[in-house]
Length: 129
Image (cartoon, rainbow, N blue to C red; front, side):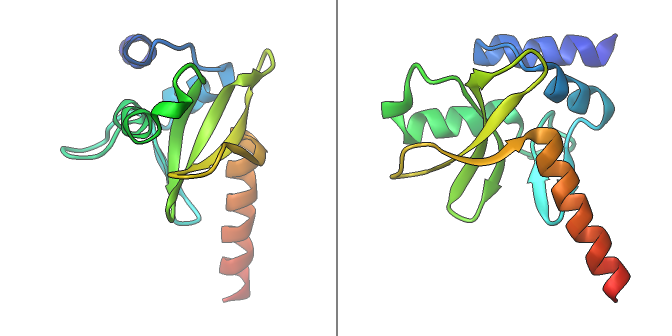
């Protein structure tokens, strides 16, 4: 029950509701590293960035995106990978890549597809070694 309350707190802080797939990720893992990418969620240690802090950072850097329902789940080089809650279905949201200067562009289908793809890359790299 404690994790559910933490998830609700994150949603309240952002003024958004997460899709079930991301809520499940938060309940099961909190945050994770997949193929070198840190998938943000709840802070895991002192000083670790949470999904709330990352999203607030994007909102400050990109005020032109006000009104867009974007939730930063990963930083990738000089861009952010976001759940695009404007483009969602019952179970999931599409992912969008956003940089400091470009409009959001589709990156991967959904968070499960992103995580599975990255896990497959890791597995193939481990098998090749």
